Image 1 (cartoon, rainbow, N blue to C red):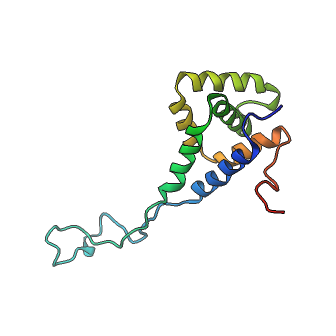
Image 2: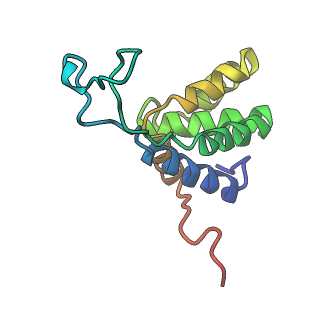
Length: 145
């Protein structure tokens, strides 16, 4: 199989997807909805005071979505099919079927195809496994000699 996407594009997508997956929403371990002792007597609203939470870096998600949006239809379909192969929905020997289904999906609604990729748990691992099924790897891609 010959890739339609440049390998460095797929590897950058994997790297960014890994960064996105590593983000964890901030959670206040002391937050207890039933605990009225946290109310401040000076707070007229009657709402419990809580520490400020860090927000997720939405820039990484936006970058991934922009990368996917910039792909041609056949490249987006290839990316989706690689993710399917990587998660086991299709076997590498069923590539033609996986690619055709992905292409149909992209042609029907490319935004829905992008959403499917964005909502896929472990996207980075699935893409990496999909590449490995065809003897492709990100090892050494993007490194300076």
